[in-house]
Length: 279
Length: 142
Image (cartoon, rainbow over the protein chains, first blue to last red):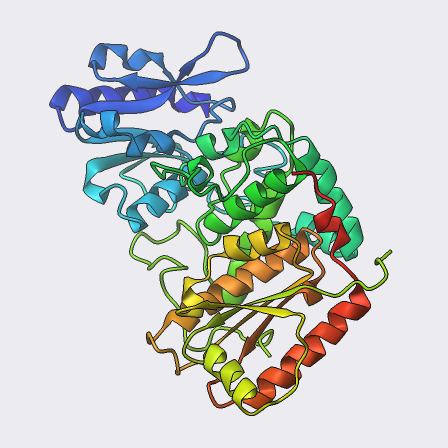
């Protein structure tokens, strides 16, 4: 991925110099070698700071909905396949306009062994320019094997497993803050008149927080893994989102963030939707 | 272990136009059904946020029933269709997290189905009586 740095710099410089974009969002070196940090570049002279390597983890699309970013004008953004899916999700939900973003699609070899092991968007599904070559997807036959493992357990085993996970939850909401699709100005958990979800680190509040976040992302989560990486307590929240992604794929033949013109899953319905569970 | 004289608490979220009317019909027909059900009327099942159901469990429900109009009969055209999609996701999620799927149930009861309502409630409460209180949830710290 590093071998494309020159191509990246050249194209970024060209866009900024011509004024086609006013801002370039990418990654730059961070204070420690194994990390990168988001970079916001408005001056073409600074494009040399941009890097593209296996440490480019953050999903930069979270910045696209920020007022201060949008005020700057058309924005170019470096985006891996998963990041592009988030951008597509934001376009689907009318949070950004397609014409306001210039997507630097990145052919990606994977950033994280576990999160990236089942990626079929190694070549992003949408882009204005592709840096690097088109990559083959790596889809395993058992794409949802962790979900399948959980479903082998009976109810009380599952309950105990998740109680142990949620016991560690400190309600920092890093998962929410890292998620590009959690863009609500006032999150449900911030409402205290009435208080729907207890914000203290107790069993009830931890469980309801995780249930509600999963439901609010149902049919919207693009599986970028930002939440799981952000969690300071290593809770397997990605697994919950994966389960719901599998449910919507099986029940509604839908995958979030693949088609900007597709209607949102929960805003639409099919008269033939499954109802076998309804008496 | 369930305490002696324990009675199940079943909370039902029902839509005003179909199920609530059906339950009312059961009442006016003097059909006998279990009194352990608490009925909460909403305009349409589409109004039911999954958070309502979570809150019901938090506040001691042993079982939650959601019931509304048959497909095509929604007073607001498509509220029940939107809700149906939500339930598919929600029940799978709850089951994945270890909530026994018999504690969260769904039904279609129309305004004419007073008998169905009575039978449904009786069956449900019986089932919950067997399962016992939802202790795992009720023991969570708050």
